[in-house]
Length: 335
Image (cartoon, rainbow, N blue to C red):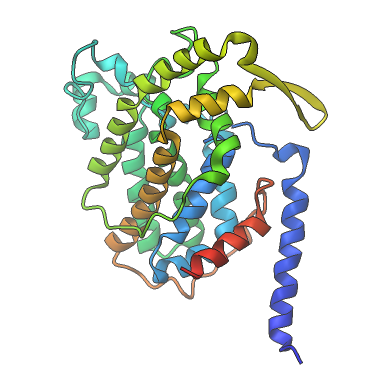
């Protein structure tokens, strides 16, 4: 006879599965953007890289960490100052041929002294905001405030992920200055939509970061160095494929939507030679490592007995939700 407690757990799990499917298939949950699907994958797989002591708590709240990975985007235009936390227009601070970082201090106060807080805010503050969020997360760990540490963990994952997107490091963020309008959604959403299932997400383990400030600036630098390829290869592939075959129409729910064609996306993705996957993997590893670093810097508190004072978790997932996520978790545990 099957143990009754195991049966109850299985029953609860499949109830969550079907609830998650119902929510994820709702028209209101169709993703439009490292887009939503990318951010959710980054937070999900970052949990799998954590050491057991920390992972045991995070895995219990995996649904929240995934669904809230997109919260900063959802309030981006509603909260004053939020938008600037997602990008940094490095090209504002240098002229062609110069080192993009020669005139931009990594320390916030030094940067303010040189450029003013208003200027920094106007051209994006993502690397500085990641450092600020790390200290908020660390304090939440120190205070063993589960609600806050989950909130900060989910949201810092979003900002770190944004810092890994080349188009989040330039004023030409959507190709509007080079007649490539729409390239932002192409790179971080459409390519993910078509290729994400083919990527390798098993990266290793989270590592302690002696300086989160240096780590996030290194990520921003790597993103910016990839920018020329992002723009140039889009032009090359457009010329090869031709504008007539660059776009197609696909049914999205009840709407026929104009999208970049699969033929064009496949050629563009191939020309980037694994760039999208590399940036995605780097984002996953850094998110997990920053979570781990904040926990270590907080003194590695025991989180095993923490409970939320109120139920604050959400099951708002994409269609790639509970069944696939459960299968990936089982696969991870078998390695």
